[in-house]
Length: 399
Ligand code: TTP
Ligand code: MG
Ligand code: MG
Image (tube, rainbow, N blue to C red; front, side, top):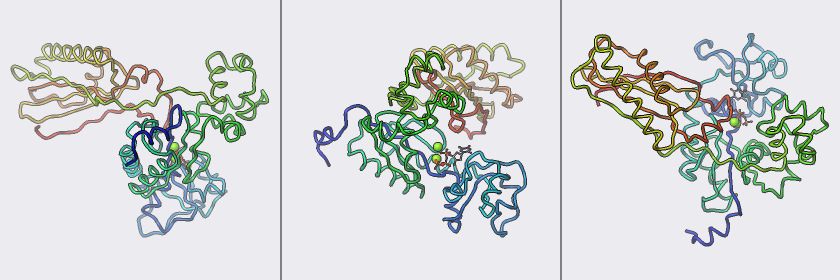
């Protein structure tokens, strides 16, 4: 073991933030079960698995595809032919007719996603989940030299999944997100602010997360084709063109400044309260009594959240029937809340999805996906990370 002072002396001043992104994620997962396709152009997308021809048939070629499906992703061999995520498969077929087309298998991608995140968490526990194939990792307090540590993380991901990833490490999330792309696939890029002029400024503004096609086009018309040009621009001109907040942010971003903390999941995973009734209650006949109990639970949970300074996004109910069978239902809101009224509405939505024909002995409410208010406010839009509002339910054995 290294001694603590030695470790400390290897830590650079400021933060050390990693962004890890899996390489050609869906396609790479497919290659794990189709190793014979390694080295070939492979595209994932199109028809659902159950609509595929019976097994035993050779893989489908892109040229045989007819339809309106799009590519979710493609191997780097297919990308070399011009195919990319989001491209219509007919267009992709024109570029890469001999490429193999595989249908998406989301459960398997989710399984691999959990595996790689768990492997990283063993080495560095402060992680922000950014979607199915990427995370930020705060390495500031993790002992070890940066490159050695990054390599250890890459090895752990490969051991856990058989997959490669790319990592960028810089003082903040903004730069790390850019850096992880710089040497894909299987990349490892460490940058500090002194590297900005050589490594970041030549890049187009569109590589900054938050600069979309519209802002990019506007910057083009202003003659600002690179991040360096943006950094050298008059910040007042940016504010005039983009408004105070976005204009100022653009200029700060071009200078590599970003103080945002990682948004990690909370230690407290859930808060719940439940009431066992004095006598069994029936959903219809005892509606008033049940409503009063429900409102009381919501009030108390609202107070629990307030005391802990947290907001909840997932609201679940638990019902136990007279035969001791237990049922749960949950509902994930698209924004976090601590308001008893929101909790009540979500709990009611859950109740409508539960069987209510037997007498009940217990009602419980559980709050999950707990966040701090500043995290809820700073939620960024990420189509692959965003958990869509969902309703789920399952039947539990007697507990
Ligand atoms: P990305 O990380 O954007 O792409 P990637 O992992 O395929 O390739 P790279 O090596 O450049 O990181 O997205 C992760 C997965 O999300 C991707 O494998 C498939 C899915 N995805 C879509 O379904 N549609 C899309 O438009 C994009 C961009 C990704
Ligand atoms: Mg990826
Ligand atoms: Mg990604």
